[in-house]
Image (cartoon, rainbow, N blue to C red; front, top):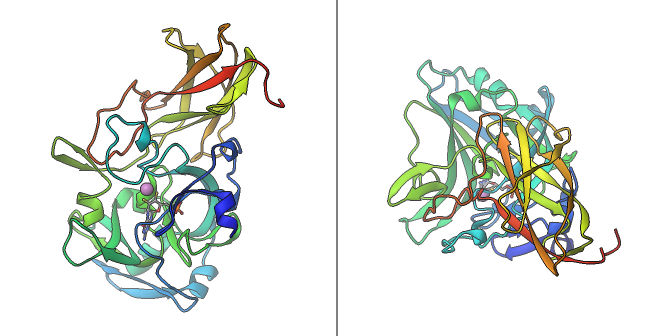
Length: 348
Ligand SMILES: Nc1nc2c(c(=O)[nH]1)N[C@H]1C(S)=C(S)[C@@H](COP(=O)(O)O)O[C@H]1N2
Ligand SMILES: [Mo]
């Protein structure tokens, strides 16, 4: 099975698997190594699948895969991150899938603007949200009966031309794990908004209150609950590798991204010195994907060193030292340090 070598499996059934750390240095994540997060067993869908479009619309309809393929195609290169990425870095560790730092990937998705499909249905004037409903469902400990995967988007985000119903990833039809035959891709939002195995789109006039909107993918801070939405500003050092070895004079490289817009600054620090060194920024991989950063550092003369990175976005958000702990462990964008052995660099 190729999946076993291409991904670090966090849970086999349903599959939850991280991109291996050494593959996160690539601008575009190798397709077999794009992280996977599924809440339920894979639904079995085939080429006769139809997506229903209904709710507060003038003319509800169902669209087939050949009809989708005949519409204008849009391609978006997106850094997609699971809201639970970095959960193991929280203290105390919250319940939930034990993600380290690899539940993030960048790839190109292709399909049809969601807007095109919604306009064809004729949205009512008072539509507030668009609900995406997956074909997957199952029991949950803290809910009655079957829970179906469903998540809503504010109408403005749903109508953005780069929010798409994707049928392809990295130029080939979606794999079952990534939501075949069609899924939402919502640039800038944490992964939960990008509903896989899309079965239905529903125009809502009032906010959706389903399980994955109110009980999961929420920031629960002392019982006050707010849905997780856009991705928080974050950075990740990809070279040297955490736990690796490098020379004292080292080129530090990594990625920074934010759901609020462009990255304007990345700073690095070493050990507990309160000195932040500005890294050079490269060109973002796309408007919705991560930005490379790089800096030359001279590490102290010691066996090991910890290198920290923190990013700031155009909206002025900067990674905090530590996030406000939340019960379900989402949105951990706290400044992270990687620890390296200092000495001869392995093969670089
Ligand atoms: N129908 C459905 N859509 C879903 C999920 C799911 O369990 N069911 N998981 C969501 C979550 S939490 C994430 S992070 C992304 C992951 O997409 P990927 O598996 O293609 O990386 O899918 C989202 N869409
Ligand atoms: Mo996720």
